[in-house]
Amino acid sequence: MNEEILLQNIILHENAYFFIKDNNQYLTKRLIKTTFEEASQDKQGRFLLNIQKESYVINEREIYYSIAIFKYIKKPSFIEESIVGWEETKLAYICLIDFENHIVIAKRNISKINDFLSHFEPLDYDVMTSIFSNENTSFEKLSMDNMNISDKAIRQKSLESNNLKDNVSTFGLQGYILNNVRVNNDDSKIALSLNASRINQLGPKNNFKGFLKWSDKVVESIKDCTLKISFLSSFATSVDYTKYKDVLNPTAILIILSKLYKEYEENKIKRCFIKLKINKEYIERNINLLSILKHFEKLVEIEVADEGYHLKHQLIKDLFLFKNNKSITLRSAKLAKVHVEYENDLSFPILSVLNWTKSYIITFDNPELIYCNRKLFKDSRLLGNLEGLLKIFIPYSELENVSSEKGSFRITSTLFDANSVFGFVEEEFMANHDYFICDDLYKEWADHIGLSENTISFYHSKYKDSNFSASDFQDIIGQALKNLGNLSPGEDQWSLKENYWERNYKNDGILTQISRIRTKQDEKDVIEYFKKVKGYPNIKKQVFIIINFISKAALEDRLMKLQNGEYFVERNEVIQILWFVSSLISSCYEANTEVYICCKP
Image (cartoon, rainbow, N blue to C red):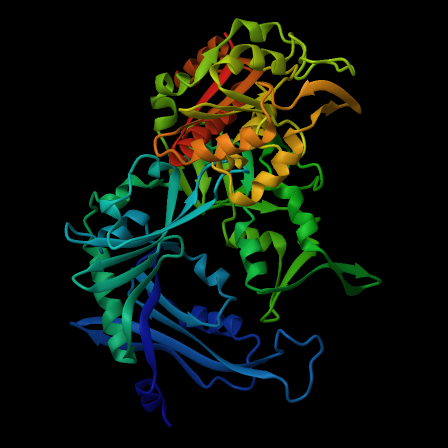
């Protein structure tokens, strides 16, 4: 068959990646050839089809298309060593459609074109949503990433309905980055992958010329786009990274591992190994990647160093962050030796995987800015609503006099020390509840739990000799966030609590006379009561965080200085605390839970 007949036999889904060029020039044959060679490094034999920069005219406009199809052989993922006759033969293709100002890419089983993609800019979120949104559009499915910098926050959410704008509150959506959307316009369904700049018109496949015409139609819609305000405008919106790049001073980073864990769940990762050079030869040593990843699950502070922005990580000492012209990336000579091998036999350095998948959230000394999914986002609500944010802080003068979290213990102790945070909690809050439990230690839901006809309250306490410590604040916020679900426990959890709550409190190896159930009821009665009230439709759920290392007045002073752009010593710590508080409020709102932070005046 000649090339024309082969092209006529190709059918493609109307599904492609759309990018914007930095210039108004068509791709050179040299760049196309290099890209095809990089994409086909594992090909078996010659190209099955290799067309480069072929002209095509649509509506009196000239475009160029290039397409390469090749065969490659791989070892099945379910065998360890290659066996003759057990190979899998697969086909891959890459198709480039050149519109002078835009480039459209369709591909299958292609992964090695990152250098090529770096020449282009993905479509803005606003453009992609505007060209497929009108007043009659139904939003059927959304998936989103959380910009919450707490390591205990829900990282991703997916929602689906006939029309989500009819039953989803827009409150709090500004804290989420929209990833994927499926819309319905007059029974025409389109799936948008906003973080990948991919548009997928759901429906039957099209012949190759029909695919070219569909691509042209979408490009014309992009060129003629007028930005619209719609239901999707409630989500976080990006700003031009290049305009802010020179004034961005990173302060902290949270590396997101959910995408890597998902690849493990889907059996896409075959192994992880360290690549070492010994006596001029490279050797590979398999390692347990999961044991390494657990050291990267917390917010890490960033400091300015001669080599760049240094991550103060306890395990990897040479981990740095760099601001590039279009993105922010991680580098480490130590981690450059750690490789991930996928089930398709391709392997990449772990940092390359994190950089490609944009798996981190970065905060800056400007609290309104945050970097996530290779985009810079601005959230003016943080400093614009300080009065509302400060309302969750409740000052208590008693917290100025506490000297420990739990006090000291004796075998005759029946109460927590009065000058401890635990002692303050019981003195201040126990009388508000019919049942009051000390659940501290061993898979605790909270340090104290209060139950009454109208409320279920969790109390999380922390004592520190620090002042404006973001890391100490992160710990207690994380404890509260990870236990939000336990405000409505599942049936499988009660037996553990019954056995635990019937005992007296034990700490520092001392078994005290402090009963776990501080209001003296039987543990079975407490559990039955908990089961009953958690089912009440109007039950009020509350979270109290009790700390001694933050003063409300001092925090308000620092926040006002932050709002006015003034310098102060604890600036970076206060910015992180501001983000943690905002994240906590957002998470509690989604869990239909009130939140209060009890602190010094």
